[in-house]
Image (cartoon, rainbow, N blue to C red):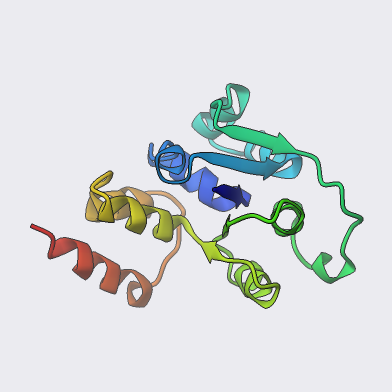
Length: 160
């Protein structure tokens, strides 16, 4: 499976100590250079910057070969390049959290998930405790409405 990611989901999965779920669930991750640049920005948390300095073997950093798509000009570099790379490599799944980027991905026929989707899938496979992971996410700057997270919390709170 080819998974492409934008910056935000990686940032949060690193912050809560669950970035390894990507390898467990999807095998490998392909990211554009701009995503690594954003993660290594001096304002990024130290743990996130550190992760970029010793990328796991399951992470492949790729240069975008397609010419820039003017339709993606409104997005930041990581979103724009993740969308372009997902199309270029014919990704099976694109990891995005930002609403506008998710809508554009859907418009382009790309299959998407987000940070919560990764945690939900991992919880269904007993790889993570979903309520605990959400608690850790909420201790960061991650924003999610109760309307979005409540059904997922209910689903995973009912597990034996």
